[in-house]
Amino acid sequence: MSTSRANTDSHICQRCHQPLILDPSIASLTPAQYSSIVSALPAPSSPSDLPPSAKLASLPPSSQAAARIWAEANHLPSPGGASGGGASAGPSNYRSVAESFILLSDSTVIPPSSNHQNSLGSGSGSGNAPASATPIPPHTQHLAAQLHSILSSKTDISHPLCTECTTLLTNEFQKKAEELGRERDAYIAFEQGIQRNREKIRSRRSSVTNRGDKRDGLGEDDIEGTDAEWEELMKKRKELEEEEEKLKWVLEERERELDEVKKEEERVKAEEEEVEREENEYLLSHSSLSTHLAHLKSSLSTAQTHLLLSRSLLSHLESTNVYNDAFQIGNVPLVPNSGGISVGTINGLRLGGRPVVEWEEINAAWGLVALCLDRVADKVGCVFETYKIVPLGSFSRIEELPPSKGSYELYASSDLSPARLLQNRRFNHAMVAVLDCLRQLIEFGKREGKGWAKGNIEIHKDKISNHSIRLPGISSMPLTLPSMSIMGLGASTTTSSSTNATGSGGRDKNGTSSGDTTAEEGWTCACKAVLQVLKRVLSGRE
Image (tube, rainbow, N blue to C red):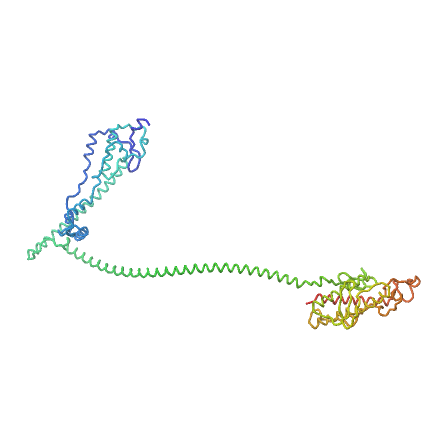
């Protein structure tokens, strides 16, 4: 930092905090001018030498009662000379009261060195001074700083100040001076009025004394004022006392109401706490019940879903008949694309239709019929009285119950051996036994009230729906080769002369008479009727 920059003054206004440039008169301040300015400053006011009792006695009569109370409270002599504090009151009390106010000017210490020159005015350092400021000699800076410190300590204003702030303070002090002047005039007028009233009262008291009353001067209860003012004040005092009594009564009433309100408030708070506690319990209970209800709803939804699925499965199972799937019964034309006779089928096997249908297929179909009849009877609990069905596929048979020991094969063959011919005769007895077992099953269903047993089902001995179940020609045929040819159980052995297209005896091209063909058609219809009854039993079984 340069020397000229270091010597630059950097004072700051104590009100607006703006950097200041000292006036040239301050910049060229001499020690003599400094002493002249300091000596012209007002001296600090010294504390009063009057004792506290004298200060209290100088108060007006209207304040004497309050002064006595204050003196007794502070253990000081009363204004009238009586001591309110007893022997404990002494000179130390006087000194404490007299020195209870100390001017700050008594404790002001002027900075001894130039290091304090910027303690009150410097805020931003020497760098804030304008570059064009005239350098101030060190002794002048020291005097200016001391002057600012003295001015700040002996007045209520901190120095230094700028021109604008000084003008504003001057205007404020002028206004305060005018207000103080008006207050002074008002006090003077009031004091003059009191003096005049006091003289009037003294003159009145003097005239009363001249008439014989020894009382002179103002009494303790005397007031300074006219009788009208006294009456007005007494009237106002009475009104104020009455108003005070009313206000006291109102205050007591309000205090009672306040106590009641406080009690009510405490009761309400207790009720509020109780309600909050009950509310919390209710909310907890409601939350628990809501959670439980949600779980129950979830369980109910799950149970309903399971019930729906179970009902759907039950309906499906009820509508499902394993016997219908195991034994599929229907009918097909005996000869495709012809309007002739139709033959019944079970699981695709034709039952009847000789000689178009081979014995192997017919035997397998009768084995399925025997199995179906035996399973249905066992399922519904029907026990046959005369026969026992032994399902063995294509080689099934019907056995008579004891005491009879007969056994009938439920299959036939085209074999021409004598043993096979006898077996084919027992085939008729087996078909009649199957028809009898079917009749017993229908009668059992009627007794038990089964739906499939209702209606007219014609079964009488070896006939069903007026068609005989016996295969024509087996029971009465002689054991001769021509009879075999007639029944179609074997190949025809006739000569070419006997099997011509228009042969004698009314035979057709296959060597079968027209009467035998009609009987075989009846047998095919009887077999078809047996299958229809079984289908009815399977479809309506309960």
